[in-house]
Image 1 (cartoon, helix red, strand yellow):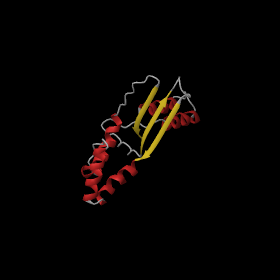
Image 2 (image 1 turned 180 degrees about the vertical axis):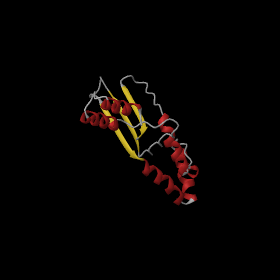
Image 3 (image 1 turned 90 degrees about the horizontal axis):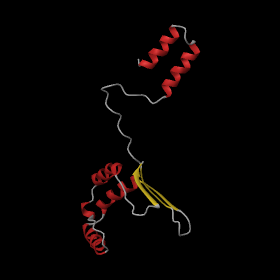
Image 4 (image 1 turned 135 degrees about the vertical axis):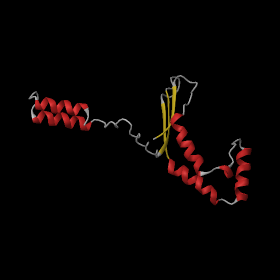
Length: 142
């Protein structure tokens, strides 16, 4: 029994509050976020479902402020990574060559599902710097 609940019951026993008041106080305590007891393992973090990119630009000299809000299901990214295993090796070689020629240094033969999970984990600590003081960019998982 936590300390606050004990205090409410003591006030009830001493006649400082009525049974109805004590019940309302205890209900209010239960609605608050439950605290884990000391020594208990922390609750596991919920698995994120979306990659979110939000850009807000207050363009004072242009047509007004602009806002971009993109929400990508992480399941789509995971499925895309798994699909690369179905692409024939000759096709992957050609795709990698075209990506490299376009300036995109990604090797699709090295892309594995665990890499996406590592990426999602690291996005919690992601910071994006923008050189424009009138713009804000946020990239996060939710």
